Image (tube, rainbow, N blue to C red; front, side, top):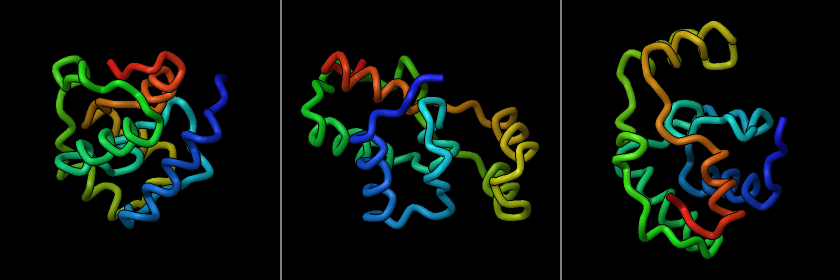
Length: 119
């Protein structure tokens, strides 16, 4: 499995602390972690996240568009599921991913750091 870039991991941890993102298990961060489903960053917050990411890593995000991924809006059903059962159980994660398809994953950000462009 691909290793997570240490500076990217630090950026995500600091972003979650700065904006008080709740219920984030930072030890489980991996390239397959979903920004919108696993970290609960969606709607307007995801735009702020992308802007800060591009600024912090000096990545060209001018060609980035949500048409490729689909705009992450979150899911009320998934939020209720997380609230009732937590998000650490494997079956909860699998059911949440069945109900809501993740739009943006950490490996996309990691490849943007390597290429210098967020596409």
